[in-house]
Image (cartoon, rainbow over all chains, first blue to last red; front, top):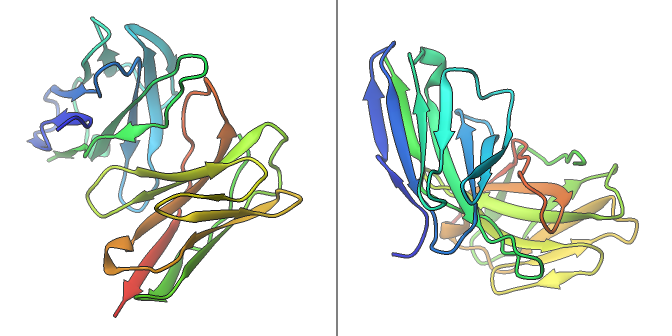
Length: 116
Length: 111
């Protein structure tokens, strides 16, 4: 499978615990995005990376959230001290941005987080 | 990026054409119209995009009005597998970053 891979697909955690999600983008895709989607709403942008550099963060990304892409390949999204309001689907997307070789964004299946 | 307006839901009989409208009256000259869809419990999937001219690919056709203030996504022969939420998004192309999703149109294809 050469698509965007996210792990885990589902995560149930107790309020106050930390959780970490992983995203493996399509190989050679230099840009990686994280989105969050709550029930009945469209995905909301959280942050994106160009290779290993985090270039933009949404105001939705509170201090409890941190994302990394240390080697410019896979990325992790960590949520510290989870709250019930963090319950959502977390989506990862990747694309190529390179002058005339831009592609569209390809999304993974998402990680569904439930905070109890 | 310009905002878009879509009907919250639509029905379509299987085998018939599904025509999904989108208003984007504040679109600027260098903004493209993109369509994505999201089947239940999956990530969004790119369908098509266009600037001024009508576009067609293996999935759908995109008709953009001459003033570019609205567009229509056409699924020529809808199947049950086309049941999904369809998002119309307007954004700059090229190195532009994020996609700004609205609430989309929930298309229900029925027998």
